[in-house]
Length: 259
Image 1 (cartoon, rainbow, N blue to C red):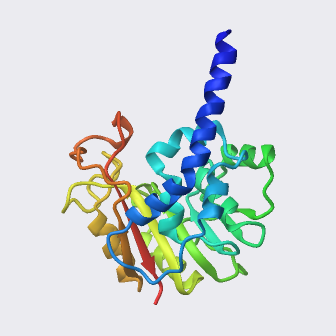
Image 2: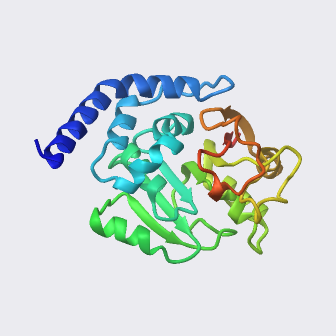
């Protein structure tokens, strides 16, 4: 048998096995991601499963799944069909597209960024998704006028970069707070720095202290509703640049609510 045929069969077997195990993986991931209780409705695991295995997602997206744990992310964020979502600092659109798949045709995801994002443009040109709206606006004024009240805001692995910009990041946080519905959520995921470091490692190690993030958002009115452990890595001693880690960095996930 040729190597190509062998590899094709192996990929099929792996895909079939993954499809059988995926519902269980969803349940385990969502159940294990939280460190405190919540009153949110049960996760829509079928929608999450469909989003993660969607053929619209790229091969590069799938390579990041082991480190980003998209099933657990969607459950932790409480994503539901029909939601209005803003993905702040959307970059190439990995998280944006995942969210758009999960909220479905009745929902919408605003992919915010401060400048042009050719990789995002290519992603949407290759596979148009009408429920994704590309938003190019400064971080301290990220929400376009006329945007419907949001159900969810996500900031995935980029808050430490925003902290390096010559802006008042609390202005951004205030505007995001104002844009959310009462009871709406904001989820921040980032590379953790050592306790007590604040923002001192954001430009050198590309990490940020989770306590600093909590303080930033609580100052503008958010309440911390839940912390997630699904991306934590106790083997990471927080001393290396996040981009230099051979294995996954220690990452925190914080879900805030607008009272």
